[in-house]
Each structure stands twice: as C-alpha cells, then as structure tokens.
Length: 77
Image 1 (cartoon, rainbow, N blue to C red):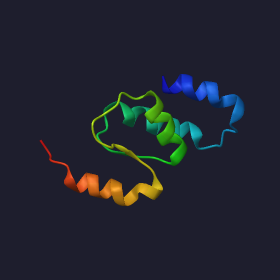
Image 2 (cartoon, rainbow, N blue to C red):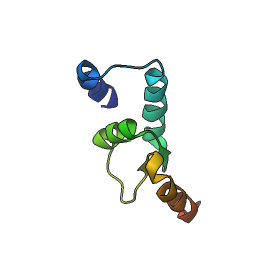
Image 3 (cartoon, rainbow, N blue to C red):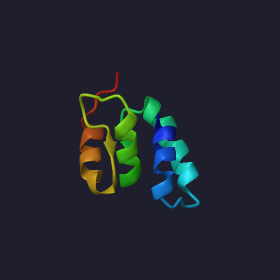
C-alpha cells in the first residue's frame, strides 16, 4: 500500500536521490516496528497506510521529545 501511495504522489512530487533509500527504510520498518522515527512526509505516508495502533508509534524531527518519552516508557517483554 505504501508503494501505491508513493506512485500516486509521484506526479506532484519531485523525487530526490535519497528517496529510494527512505522508501525502503520506511516500508520495512513500518511492517514490524513499535517505534519509528522518520521525516514528516514519510510519517504522513506510513500513517496513511499502516494499521492503527493504540499508542503513538511514528514520529518526526519536531516530535523527538515525544519519541524519547514513549521509547523510555515502553516495557520490554
């Protein structure tokens, strides 16, 4: 679904050289991560297609404090 979303956006977005690497990082990590730190556009894309969770799990740069708080509060099973 993330690939389809990116393909739909391709007409209105200029791809940069590192966007392929960002896509791989976001798509692989989103499938299994409990916490994910991405840039704002990739956060938006991942949340648009990922199943919802009961806790915040995708963060971007301006949410770094919230990311660290959530990460520190998690319990390792």
